Image 1 (cartoon, rainbow, N blue to C red):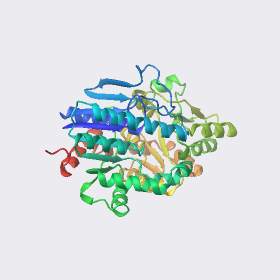
Image 2 (spheres, rainbow, N blue to C red):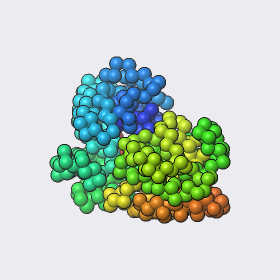
Image 3 (cartoon, rainbow, N blue to C red):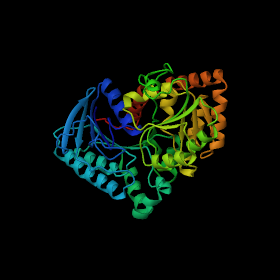
Image 4 (cartoon, one colour):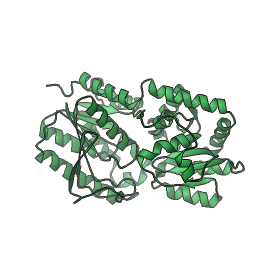
Length: 413
């Protein structure tokens, strides 16, 4: 098939969305399909240029990455927390991506648009209409449900209006894909989407990139962390993840000189993390900023424990923490501050433990439990890696995705 993927993010941007699109595109290309990714110029999460990336004229750029055609069109750079910036980002991408779909001489067999930015769906839908091909809507964060934790957003764009738009997109698509099993029930019960056109394809892990390795590596040497028991948080530090909970846990453990908490990533929530760190004088907390995606595996391998956390809110019980797959693939113990499906996956894998979200005392207790039992730590890491290899690798999920397309009749002529 000739597959067009419309995505807000793509490497060198980091995060679950960029990684998922990049890995799926490469796997499908290796399987013999012709893949084009339609995206913007990299700027997430800081809303600024990436050093070393050639932006050209910022209007249009075509490049090839591991055999995948990547087409970049103009997009407004949105800084964290800026509502108007988000609107301009969405509007600019909608116009430029749809214009590409209109004038492109390339013909596609299917168009796949992947959220969480909700207005990416209309871009994919319009492009599919122009090419008269099936449209796949992939939902990584369900809207308007996510508005329940984004109070500022709902003040500007009423939840009812979002609901009408999303309902239209769910029914307009030929195939609706969610990344969590809970989404299946949401699609059927709330939006009355026919079961036959729904598929669930979780995020999974690039098993060749994220794999076990020596603890004492280049990351530890670079940041003078040799000999430490590292508890890491890796990825975007969003406002609603309440990562200051980790800082408060670090404060409870500050009498142990071996324990170090490490934040690797960027995001609007880092300001609060820094504030609480200074308030508590938590010297065992290291805020290191983002690193290139190719260096992230070294961060996980250097970690004794890695943590995935979100605020204590009903919405997060319905989704799956995107970081858990790469943590488990790296063969290290995982602690998750989640209820619901994320907790169920980690417990099913036997890869770590769940704690009550925003409960720093329980988090600190579990860290000590793993630190004081090396056999337990080793077993948890092995279980996580085995779980990934038993059906949750990116290559396995890419193959499943193609089978789901066939089941739904997508791409058939």
